[in-house]
Length: 356
Image (tube, rainbow, N blue to C red; front, side, top):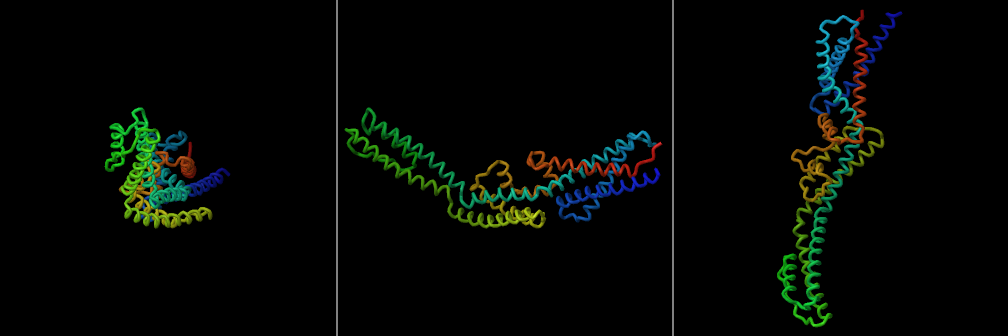
């Protein structure tokens, strides 16, 4: 009876080990293939199976070295050797790649959509020339504030106790001319005996200065806007926007249908790469939301967020930087560990040595 039960337990453990090992090896092979697409998938599987068997043997060496009910020579050597094998082939190879595959499959659609939507916003900036318009508005507001302050100084001088358009008033006009980068504003002859006359003189200066202000603002706009460049930028951004918006629609439909199509994601990533290049070419027309975005879109070697997720190394680096907050990365780490530990446990049971 005991022999029959032991045989059943061994067969069950072998089957369970194969089941959990298959899941783990699939995840590792997928991760390797995502990282190295030129590597044949069959070769990825061969490497993965070899690594997992070695990791399983390492776990068994550790368990056997700690089991005092079996005969084992050089226990400490088994413990050290098993620990090294487990660290190298499981902790460094299997667990990180498994986590990567589970996480990638769970969130690649959302990451690609976020990347597309963020890129769409920057393309809109280029198409609408948002940055130049905002910069023009800010420069004009600053200039108008300074000119209005000088106009108030001029009014106080002309309407003040001295009641006249003397050297101090002319000095203020020189300062205004310098602000507006125009020829010196000439003195306006006129009586200043009465308050009404002085007010009329102030208004005459105001009208003349505001005309020069309009001329200066028009010159500022021309300095900020290269019409030839803006026209080409608008054309390039519009073309990319159509592709990006089409990709967003396709991914939303894919997600709503509950499927994950690698071809659709790869197409979207190709569109992103083209859009990243456009944004880099016209980066001076973009208001970046963060330094990280500016670095990503203007880098010499541009890498989209979708492309980074293809790499197990970049994925773990981004996790360490806190890039995946709220996306459940830790959950997939735990799942990966549990899958492998379950396989190791069943491997040890299936090939357990006879006790005294």
